[in-house]
Amino acid sequence: MKITILSLFPDIIESFFTSSIMAKAVEKGLIEYSLINIRDYAWDKHKTCDDAPYGGGAGMVLKPEPLAAALDSIGGSLKRVIYPSPSGIKFDQSQAERLAGYDELVFICGRYEGIDQRIIDLYVDEEISIGDYVISSGEISTLVIIDSVYRLLEGVISSESLVEESFTNGLLEYPHYTRPSNFRGLVVPDVLLSGNHAKIDEWRRDKRIQKTMENRPDINIDI
Image 1 (cartoon, rainbow, N blue to C red):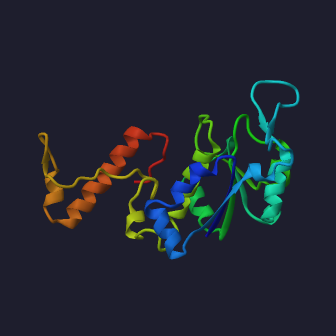
Image 2: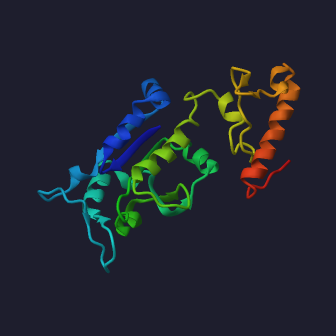
Image 3: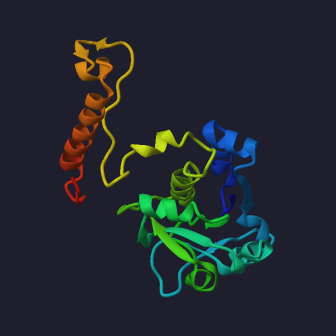
């Protein structure tokens, strides 16, 4: 998969692609990425990329000219362009799985009060919200989406690791334990030490159902 990100602050993003599992995915050729500094496409000597909103109001809005020039430089009108925004459709695991099916994704990182609506009208295929709250950095919301998507690509992580994660089959993930078996008086459940894999599977499923009912009663559980 190729990922292109348009941002006023690409340095925020760079370390994500050069660290941990993502760095390995890039090294293996599973992920190709490109970071575009929107300011490089501003036309005036001050490299201005934002301006006051028409109609008044607080904050600034990212101007259309630099964004359009940056998008045109990569043929953005022919690619899947995503704009993370609190006004978008709420993101979930099923959407991550859907986006993982694309060969190429382009992300626009908003700032301040957002981006000029005409960029959305002309280029954006999807507005996606990572939750019902507002943050100042489009870079962070972009990375949240990318992180949930790229790990689903074949070869990035073990397929076994994806089988019983949260939201798989509509349930949250069961608790995990490792050595030591006794930590500050809290002991690992006996069933996990029993070697009885059928009992372990049953315990894990019960814990997934319990945790989902306690933490996410809004999820419909198909038991």
